[in-house]
Each structure stands twice: as C-alpha cells, then as structure tokens.
Length: 390
Image 1 (cartoon, rainbow, N blue to C red):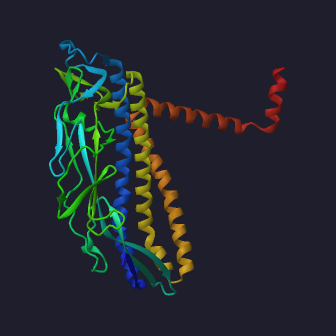
Image 2 (cartoon, helix red, strand yellow):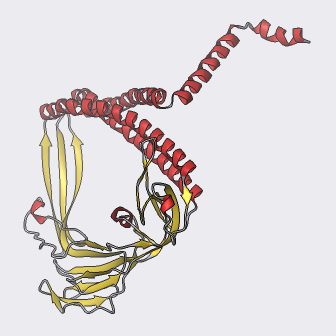
Image 3 (cartoon, rainbow, N blue to C red):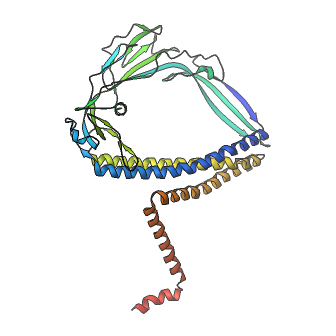
C-alpha cells in the first residue's frame, strides 16, 4: 500500500492551557528584552559597515591578476580574471571524476514520509480539542527521513548509505594569484555533470546501478520504485570569470581590515568594476539592516504577545470572547512594540550617527517652533499681514 492514514484526537483543559500561558510569560520577557540589544547592535553594525565601505572605496587599487606586484602588499586591491584549477576531484563510490573547483554529489532516496494536518476546536469552558490526521506516503527525499520518529510505527526507512557530499579543489588560481579556502568556498555557480561517459560499479548497496538521464539509478525500476531506491546526480563548479576585492598578501589574498572596524573581502561571479562592487555592497548592507530591524520588531512583538497571553486564556472560557481578547492583545502588543523599537533605533542613531541624528532633531524642533508660532496668529492677523505688507 502506497499510503495510509489515521486520526488522533486530544484535548487540553482550561487549567492546563492557563498554566502553559503563565509559563510563557518568562519566555515572553526574555524575547522582549533580547529585541533591544539586537536593534541597537544592528544600527551600530550598519554604520560600521557603511564607514568601512566608504574607507575602502577611497583606498582601493585596481590591479591585473596576471602580474604580482610586491608594492601592492597590504593594500586593498580589486582584480578580475579566470578562477582556474588543475585539481581532479574524484568520487570513489561511483567512479566519477572531474577537473573542477568543486564536485557535488546529490542523493535522493525513495522513503516513507509522515504528513500531518491539525484542526483545533475551542469549546465552552476553555477546553481545546485537537484533531490531528497523520498520512504516510512514499516519496523521494534528499535527506534521511527518521521513521523511528513517526507517530505510528510500521513504516520503516533504511539508512541512506551515500550522503550528500562536496569535494573541493585545494589549488585554485586567479591569474598569477592563489585563492584561499574561504574564497574558493564562495565560488558557487554549478553545472550538471553528464554521467554517460562514466562506468559505475554494477551494484552498490546491494542494488543494481543504471544510468537514466543525468542520474545513476540504484534500484530495479524507476517507473515502479521501492523504498530504499536511490537517484544520484552530480554537479560541478567549473573554472569561471570572477571579480575579487581583498588585501593582497604576496601572491594571495586575505580580508582587508578597515580602521572603521569591518573587514572587506568580496568575491562575485563575472567582471565587475570597483565602483559597482561597492554599490552592490552598500545595497547588501542596507538590505541586512532592514531585515534585522524587522526581526527585532518581530521578536519584540512576539515577546509582548506571550507576556499578555494569560489574559486571552482567562477569556477563553467563552471561545468567541477569547478570540476577541487575543486579537486585542496582538494589536496592543504591536502598538507598544512600534514606539519601543523606534525609540531604541533613535537613541542608537544618536550614539552611532550623532551628526545625522542631531540634524534631524534640529529640523524637528524647528518645525515644531514654526508650527507653534503659526498657531498663535489669530485669523485676523493672518489676513492683515499680507495687506499691511502692500
């Protein structure tokens, strides 16, 4: 049978749910408090990164990758060229080899998987009934599915004998320079490796091996797979044009440490001039800043929602009333979160961007003064003023 299912019904009484929400107060307080240093740190990080990029932009030297000039040692350099290697990477299990920067083995196995859907019902008195339906299906998965963790036993998966694996070249050059392991890791543009020229062992893991398309198939029939059958394919990262910006160290590169505090070590696919590379870096910094601001606000909001959750539980004796109170709690938590987050960011600006923050404060104060002076004018004065000026 390719799939089966069963339904499990559980219930939790009001006192148990209230106890759980009271325990959640502690974690809510922790989340709420944790959001403040996260928001503060993020503002400092973004300013430090911005200043480091500005510093680097003023110092960078564009060089040819075909010439190692000792005078550039210790300098922030920008260069382009072909990232190349002569290393031959080999997967001994399947007799597959390639002259490449990386050789990647992808494995998927036909396995049992557990899917569950949950439906909850609130009842008068605060009891919550949960109906969970577990369905077991056979499907291809690129990771080991732990059948021992299934709700119902009897759907057993064998161990995955050939895991996902990556082989990396140790020697990758950029013209006359050598890339370090960190830079090699960041070259990631992959291509599918054709397997028709390779002859794997006839059997592996007690299964017949055949070539189907760009896959090795371990099993009897792809059209009628059995639990434990596998598909294996390979990808390579081939020599390619890259752009690199880092500190030159003899005939290699290391991260450039700026006075502002952030390190500069960029590697991008293709040919990119220095100015464009810094523009991309500034855009990435801005994206990270806003993403972490969102995360900080979300953590603060979730923490406050957990802090107020016992109020919803108290009202859940009547389900409709509990739902209304819970919506109100989320709105209240949001209304508290926004000013708390904005004030934290504003104070951080004063600490990390005093000139900009001071300018904004001065403009705000001036606007308030003007509005106050304008509001003191009577309607008669407002009309008479232009007439007297004539």
